[in-house]
Image (cartoon, rainbow, N blue to C red; front, side):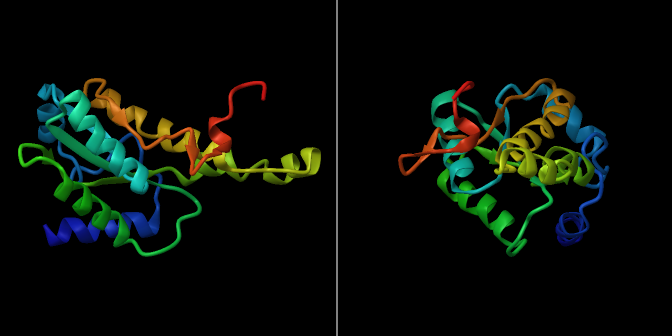
Length: 178
């Protein structure tokens, strides 16, 4: 268990290309087959308080019995790695005892993130006088979980998306044409 946690931490720190073929030590073929059989399984985005709240709400409203927490690394992380497993532990404490929280999966694609969020930042800023990585980053965070969801039998992905924070509309939630 300690070795697995150390490997996950190293993966987070090194940030290799890791989306489609997750390492066997992180998720074995046996686990994949078991997850496919579970009708009450949901993939959970671990990205902050909103995602933890969404996971808890999904258990209450949708009846999920198994949660698979996932963390997707980006090109802009900062802060302590410990905050990610601590968020999983906080979520676990707030769930009913019959809900199983599986081991955290960590993966990502620095190349994909850079293509969506960094490659054209200067050109967008020059052309429009404004640039935000929010839209591309959210696209990245959600789309990188799709291969896992499909691999596990089209399991739902629960995120912490909200239309606003304290009454302020988030740029990635603005309706088209606004």
